[in-house]
Length: 470
Ligand code: HEC
Image (cartoon, rainbow, N blue to C red):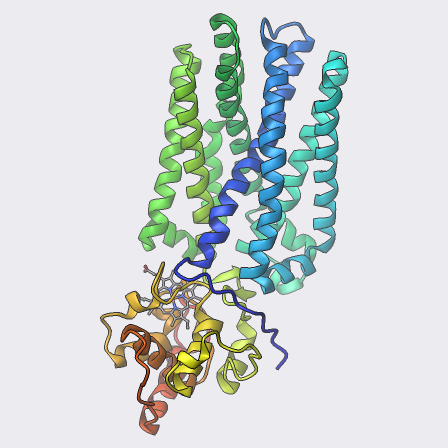
């Protein structure tokens, strides 16, 4: 079987997803701010061209652009490269599939990104010397390019959750314009506008502008918060097109994901309410503390939203096509027959600390099938999760992994590997003693074979093999 094995990094007590997530949230926040910042600039420059921007406006435009360039170009680009580094370490096969499938889409995205950088840099260098109409054109170019890089990347990210007809046809365009493409593109566009406006309220407060023009500027940029009112509708549209099981998790099925959704929605409602009632209706101004607090709330909303988006895809990184642990659904039967790590070429770390070959086999199975989502004793630690279970409960629940929790893939190895994995977790829980008995009762293996057959190889949430074919 030609399944590709990749080296697997061990980050100790830190879950791999936390590394991608921690960096990803910053990156998404900065990238969306870069796009929304362009919208804010275009709007204000358009007002300036018609002589309606008022005192302090030009000063603000140039100051805001400096903040935009420094924060989002530098940090945004660095975290973007960081995303490639972390994701190819944690999920090389997923990234490989994405690059293979969307090779040219990614190339196009890259062209727009280059255009965004070039236009931004030109404005940064020469903007002060340009006439208003030329400035507007350049900012327009910047914003369009920035938004289109979102357009292209959004197709790839939304495909991971709802690959649509791509599964059956393999068509790149069916995958790109997948069922969640438009709701997520529109939602992100609204987020971009809100972030651009919120950041503008911080910058305007940080500048030396008299109170009255400052209030007028804040009222202007707050216009970009108005489209936030559409978020509930676009959010509902998104919820309607995602798979049933994903929707159930966020709507209560998984407490963690539901909580993150509540954080995201709650923070967005607070921002929206403040913007609509306070700034636009009561014509209040906001000081730098409030502005920063609103930005922090927006960061919380982004973090919650991205967490949910990543979380609801489990157990897949590309739904129906690739499990999070880099195994495809078609490969499962063969791996069950041949053994999942029989061909895994990589040596174990600290192999001489393992007490016997069975525990060593268990360690390899754990590394290949479980380590992407679990740690030994840290975050989502396997020893904590199985801590109170008897040996037989472990056998039963791991054999039934996808039914134990539907956000785990089915167990992909043979009975001997399953028993080795159970022994490995017990050895870990027992604080890794230097000797450990081998469990080789043929009756146990026969029982595990039976359990595995019963569990079937379909993802969770589907009928078990035994129930489907009595
Ligand atoms: C796609 C990610 C993913 C993979 C791969 C994965 N798990 Fe899990 N597992 C989870 C999540 C998420 C939970 C839920 C933790 C919680 O409820 O706090 C979980 C829970 C568990 C639990 C506790 C279940 C319960 O009902 O309390 C056990 C045991 C477990 N996993 C074992 C494994 C083993 C063994 C493997 C490898 C064969 C594995 N997992 C692979 C994500 C994964």
